[in-house]
Amino acid sequence: MKRTYVPVMLAAAFSAVSITLPAAAETVTIQEGDTLSQLADSYHMSLQEIKQLNGLTSDLIYSGQILKTDADGNRVKGASIHTVQNGETLSGIAMEYKMSTASLKSLNGLQTDVIYAGQRLEVQADEAPSSLDSGQFPLKKGTYDPFDDTWGKSREYGGARVHEGTDIMTEEGTPVYAATDGSISRKGWNELGGWRLTVNTPDGFNVYYAHLSKYADGLEPGGSIKKGQLIGYAGNSGYGPEGTTGKFVSHLHFGLYDSSFKAINPYPYLTQWEEK
Figure (cartoon, rainbow, N blue to C red):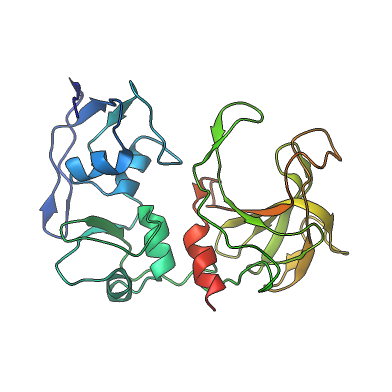
């Protein structure tokens, strides 16, 4: 990969788990064929580090884009780095740091459990269990199609953007259940999400259910939600003024956001919940 380097201001070295990051910050100009994961490996950074450093919400990059490659000071608060050793597994590393496998995958932008020796993973030692770790799948078994990781896929309605969630194909009218406890922070029409519901969990996450055809009775902003409670029914609402339907096939769009409404890939959590 041909790269153009641009010097920027020096940053103090950051040490974690006996690894010292370079003091000299650099930028790289993306060339045709480059991928974000390749760049992260080249600079001995985790995928999540390079995404956070550059404010990226997906793995999509483009030719000519300039990215910073110094992770100093941009690690998730309370996180450190674990360098994968021969024979280690993702689940074993998660257990070592008292994390769930799903939260470790989400923190590092991993889509599978495959890791390799020398890979750098962000970890959060002594992480308190979150409401997401104990969540449940929002649809009943047998009511939906197999689903893929649609996080970061390109979307065009409303302008070029990337997909901030997981789409689960299911028939219109399929019951949707709360994945976590929480309180309703948003209910009503959204041009992109159609009839949508946002639930704020006790530990500050925001769970987003979109494209509903109908809400369950008794749901109002500020009201409490219990995990497993019926919240509505899947549909194909959205992509237009209030009441628009039929612009796409029926499905549940499931999204996760942190307390500042920064998007989190929900796919690792959904696959974990589906296995319960």
